[in-house]
Length: 434
Image (cartoon, rainbow, N blue to C red; front, side):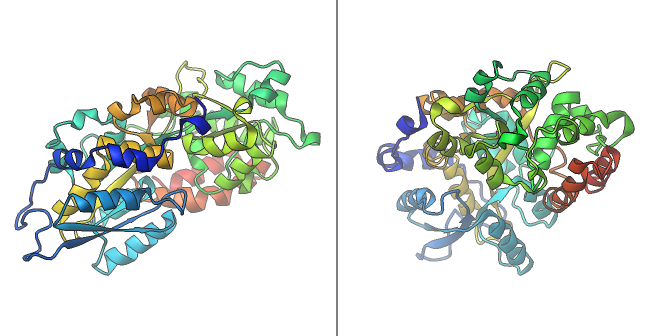
């Protein structure tokens, strides 16, 4: 099934989903000390909850439509959805928390959960989640992601949807070079060398040197040497240690020795990564299912494929599970009522509607088994990659956001050009998350 033929109208889903019953059955409300029932405001007036979030398509109304349905079936609660860019959500959150006036709930990026939790601003959700009759339907990796990778940690957030990174490649380029699809890291390097033609402006791999490109770096390091080559038993970094530096050499040598990345790689972010694939500049790139529709529409379904991340020398593969989640704030008006809303978004029907419209990967096993996701080849690769997908290391440590958004993009240019040795590059990254 192609993306163009598999799309389902969210309005059709909304009409037929029966979300009222699902939302009521799913939401396990456990009032905390001194609270009343959800939405109780001491009178007959509705409790108005503020919810901040972002969506990839700024014209999308899927969250507004879901809020409308929720509000229709919760007469004492009115959810007001405010959409804004993802970066603006975090900036506003910090200001609102410091001012003592946070929203009642929000979408939150995994990069920011540890810092917000350290401020004491999150309302723990274990008591609510544990009372869900169908909590085992959630993909375990997603629940662990809401605990920032630590099974003993509180459930900081409610799982919502996920993204699993895989490798996009150009099958037409591979066929022309007589290459099979890349299954191992050796296959990958050999293929990138074979399809690179600088005179034609073509390169084997789209390396992301701008913000958040560190994710791909850690994926490769863990694939090459296992997670133990990235993070020690205490959770601290080890990838910078002399006996582990070979992984960084391998990564930087894609530019330094093999010259299979575009000359713009150090400044390439997500937009440039996708534009290079669509323009025929690069033949492979790491990303996830949300990029599939635009790549298919530009290149044609026959000219873009996805495979799980290549297997490393140890025979294992490793990739990123990027959890998207919702937070309830301790300083909000009524955490019980806010839980009603975020648990509704995580109900099977609402999750299916949102993921169908927004392109994310459902984190309920029952929803992932739906033909819509199983028959979409890119979603299917994502689901098949889940057993090898984990939270990126160090997200729970102070300094992670600095590494992702400041240190990484500052260091990639000198490192990729060979001006900065591998050991210095890795060491300076490690400083942020020690």
